[in-house]
Length: 342
Ligand code: 5GP
Ligand code: MN
Image (tube, rainbow, N blue to C red):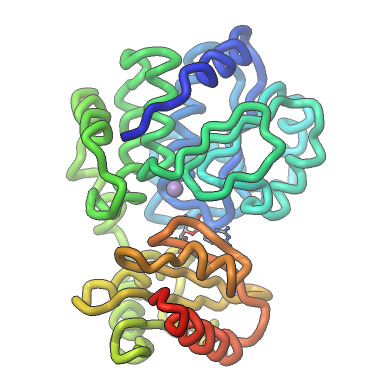
């Protein structure tokens, strides 16, 4: 059950009472939820006379490029014309969506932090929100930021604001962050929201196909390779991990996002409690963690990998070699096990 704070909705309404300049910011390695919820807010506010700029720290995967208006998003890393900095300079309001802290947006977060005049709004569903926001909508019990965004939009402007475009954007976020309605935190209210989205005329099978049946051949082969050759297990098959080096990624014509979802697959094994995926990036290793039930990977990510997220889905970073990262993971899993946490 999630009841958003209507007092805060009124504060936000007041903030947006006159047409103003809004910048919507999402997190690094943006996913369907970050993009869907940002674009939906942008669409609704633009329709009400605001000037809205959506900006992301780095690019998003190819299978999300069809989302309505995603072509208008500015990618800060490629932003040679400094459109983001210009928009931040002029901004009256900065909204951070699907991130609990500016640090989740790396260099873009630093650019936001430099802007001291705009009012800052947080709309997010991760644990442990940072301080420094003027209006906070932090709801870790929400299955996605998109569902939270839906609730805020409807509280502000009513269900009429949910056009087919807005509904498509929100549905992408809800579908991807709930694993197509399979993860925890589903609620009757979520399905009521989805009923409104469905009523707006969105094409649900098409949205599913656009995202889950739109990969490259290389991605399918990389997936087979990762599971067959790279998946290792610990604690008698209760914990798994996989890794991908840059050389392996090149071998399968890797494109950004191609390993998205791999980390979930070991959890299709009945007795599996926790899964990790280590992916080489420029200068560090990206750590993805997933778990089942009581096993808390948010705490695990915080403690061992400078990260965080949700209880059953979290991530972090490692700044040592792949072998050292794996060694650290194995040691950490055993420590966690000794404490009865996995
Ligand atoms: P993914 O494995 O899909 O990259 O991330 C899973 C979850 O963990 C997401 O909710 C994401 O926001 C969070 N997450 C991923 N990487 C990091 C990180 O480096 N730091 C923090 N605090 N959270 C992360
Ligand atoms: Mn999310």
